[in-house]
Image 1 (cartoon, one colour):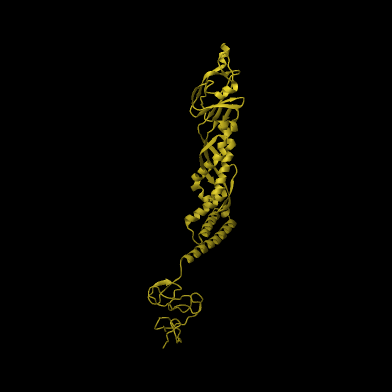
Image 2 (image 1 turned 120 degrees about the vertical axis):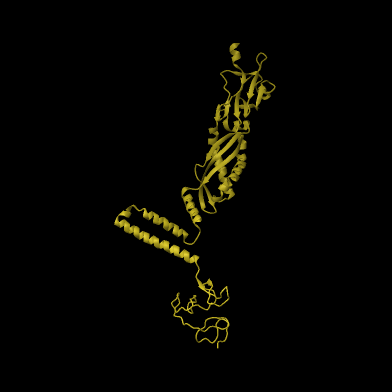
Amino acid sequence: MGWFKKQLLSVIEWQDASNDIIVYRFPMPSGAEIMNSSTLVVRESQAAVFVHKGEIADVFGPGTYKLSTENIPFLTKMLSLSTKGESRIKAEVYFVNTKRFIGQKWGTQNPIMMRDVDFGHIRLRGYGTFAFKVSDPTAFMRECFGTNPVYRVADLVTQYKSTLVQLLTDCIGESKLSALDLAANYKELSKMVEARSKEEFEPLGLKLSNFVIENLSLPEEVEKMLDERTKMGVIGDQIGTYTQYKAANAMEESAKNPNGNNLAGLGVGLGAGAQLGGVFGEAVSGARNKRKPVTIQCVKCGATIPGKSKFCPECGATQALSCPKCGEPISKGSKFCTHCGEKLEISEKVCPKCGKQLAPDAKFCPVCGEKIK
């Protein structure tokens, strides 16, 4: 009788001291059986699953139970065994950890190909964290761990991490966001992945929560080009700025030439410096010419006005001082056109009506038609 009583389990419980075990099978000594009226202790964030010959018989949530034929009717019906008035339960007990397992890492093993509105075809890499929990112990046992004595977090994460990357890839593609706009939409993309995961994980008895995107990055060479583009944006988007920037960098690299101490290297360095200096000077000159329009002084009031103005915006006087050949403005008293070199005939005759300078033999004003006496 002493040996017989040892084989009847009276208290069944699992004190989980780990952080990575999802399922734990209660150890049953060889020949041991669960005695009727035994105590089953299921702690918070646990579920106890009774299995008989590979088939799920009963599931218990958190609480303390006295096992009897009344509270495990399905298992009792399957067995229908009693010995000397005491029922004994032949079954295996699996404890399922239903708490949230946080801080699980995910990442892209290979770059994600996508079509971008700004850069065309690009490749993205990403990484982050997520959390999950067992929402349905019965479905989880049937679909995932089976009858393994121990099932750990690593076994699950390794298997389903690629599914999360696939869901993220679909969400990025369907969002049609530019790579430059992804960082501002990490939270929205995370919510999309969590919503999509229900279709994939609920049939497995799992629930995904707190999917976090820590970073989505472009290839290194593309990021370098973006860095240069950002630098140019800081300098200012002006004509010739990029040429100035590249010329300055080239001159700096030429100055670091290790052959600069010998005569040949010095000649090459000076030649490159002169050439780059010319490029730099042309860029600066071109930019200045574009920025500074040609101006002249009004023939009547002396105000500074645009070079090709026909009338002064200050006093309204007609600006008659222009080259008869090229039409460019000339200064008062000039003998030659500074633009085309045309020799100018100086005449003091002006139109008495509009003030335009006239040729010495003019009989009518070419602007207002006034007859000249």
